[in-house]
Image (cartoon, rainbow, N blue to C red; front, side, top):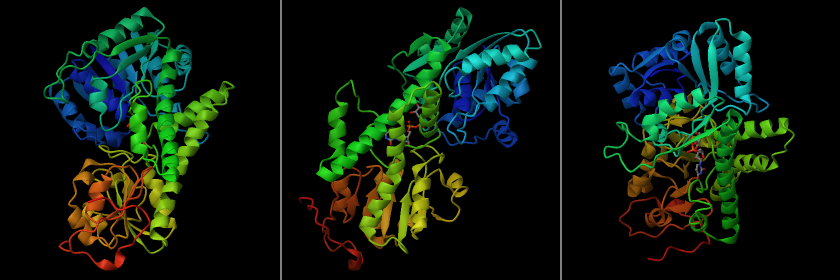
Length: 474
Ligand code: UDX
C-alpha cells in the first residue's frame, strides 16, 4: 500500500522504515531541511539500533523515500502524522505542528485520505483534527481521522514496532478500521522478514485493539503515566530501604513475582527522563485539570522524580565531604542505554548541580556526547570510561550501558584518586566492585566497603576511607 509518514523523529522514522520493511511503499517527509538532506543521503539524524539497516534496505528496495510534506500528502491514501508535540511552558502539549499539517492536508489533498495521529496527543485532538480538516477543506477531500498511538521505546524502537504487545486504533468508521488492519496485517500475523532477530519466531501475535479515538488517545498518556508512576513508586521504596537497611533489588523482585504487579519498570535509580515520560506526565496532569480532575497522584510522581537528583547529589556530598574542587567522573549521559538522546536526561540536571558545587566533571558516554556537548559544553568529554576515571575522587554511574559492566576494574583502580563508585542505576554488582577494592554506593541497597585485595594491585594508599558498613565475607 502507498503510505505517507509526516515527521522523521524517533516515532516517524521508525514507523516509516518498519512499514516499508513489512512491504508497504512509503514516503516520509521532514520539515527540518538539514535533517531531510541527511536522510536523503542515507544518514540517520539519530542513533537507534538496527534502524539504519532497515532504512538502508528499504531505500535500496525502492520502498522508502524522503521528501517534502507537500509530496507526502500527495503520495499515500493513509497519512501517519508523527510530528513533535513538545511541552509548552504550562505543560500542555504544543499541537501547532499537527494543526499545520492538518491544514496542508485539507488544502492540498483530494480524493480520500485516512489521517492517522501517531504523535502523542492529548485526548480530543482527533475531534479538533476532524473539525480543522472540514474547516479548511477546499478540495472536496473525503477523509477519516484515526488515532494510532505508538508505544515504542528508544533503544529498541524497531523491535518494539515490529513485535508490539498491542496495536491500538481509535476510529469512527469501519473503513478506517479495515484500512489500519490491512496496513498492520503482517505485524498482526507476525509474518515479515525480521531485521532484528536472525532466528525470529515465537512472538505472540499482538492484540489489535479497536476503540474510539478519544479512548485510544487516552491509552497512550495513561500508559506512560502509569509506567512513570511505577518508577517513582520503586524509587520511594528505595529511599525507605536505605533508611531501614533493606535491599530494594530484593523488594522489587518479590513484588514483581506477582503478575498483577509485574517485574518490568521496577528499577530504582536517579529518575526517569527522555522525551516521553516527563512531558507526558505533565500533559496528562494538564488534560485532567482542564476536565476538572486534580490528578494529584501524578503530581506526586513528578515531585518524586524531580527529587531524585538532589538525593543523589546528597550521596555524593556525604561520600566526598567537600565537593568543591573534586574531580568527578560521569559514566553515561543518555537518558537510558542504547540511545544518543539526552532530552530531559537526569545526567544534565546532575552535572549542572555538581558544577554549581564547584566540582570538575569528566564525562563519557558511548553515543550521547555530541548531543550533550550542545547542552553542557563546559565539562570534559572523554574517549572512554577509563579516561573519564583518571584521577577521579568519585565515579558516578548515570546510564546503565552494558560496557560499564565489562570494565577492567584493576585498571580503573590503578587510575582513580579515590576508589569510590556511586551507582545511580544499580547497574553494577556490589560484591564484584568491592572485590576489586572499591567502596560502592548504590540506590536502595547497603553501601559496600572495599575488600582488601592482595598488595599486587598498585594503588596510592592515601585515599582509602573506612565507614561503618559490614565487610563483604571472603
Ligand atoms: C517510553 C515508553 O516506555 C514507551 O512505551 C513510549 O512509547 C515512549 O516512552 P522511552 O522514553 O524510550 O519509552 O524509555 P523507557 O525505556 O520507557 O525509559 C524511560 C525512563 O525511565 C528512562 O530514563 C529510564 O532510565 C527510566 N526507567 C525505566 C527507570 O528509571 N526505571 C525503570 O524501571 C524503567
